[in-house]
Image (cartoon, rainbow, N blue to C red; front, side, top):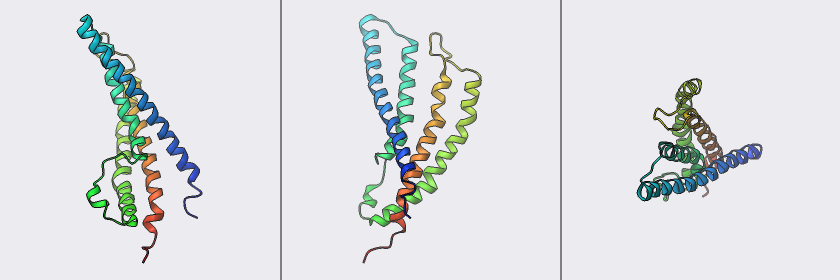
Length: 173
């Protein structure tokens, strides 16, 4: 059987995280431009904006939250290669599977569960900036917490499912 039945679902998870990662890349470019504009405004024109400074925070947070699943998809996460480079593909797959099932997926589920009430409270209060001239609708940014947890969970599940066949395979020789 293998993963052939799940292949369309795995490709969909990859595509969603790919889109989120590309959006994060676009946000990074906007963030650089905005920070440049803020520095220029402050030092060249002695001007500033609370809303623009908060937008930097928004972009920075969104960039990281949307990039989590993308980074995992492209194997850009931190790993201890000193050990894993000496392991067989089967051992690497087993460690990947165990790490996903015992650490990553429970963390994502915890993050999703813990952020849910926080985000709902923010939405119900239509939370905005506490600073005069700040950005409204902070609840939109806070909504990225469970979204990012869900994206990372799905990509972690895809990673675990892809690690299953090599982890269960018999050692050659």
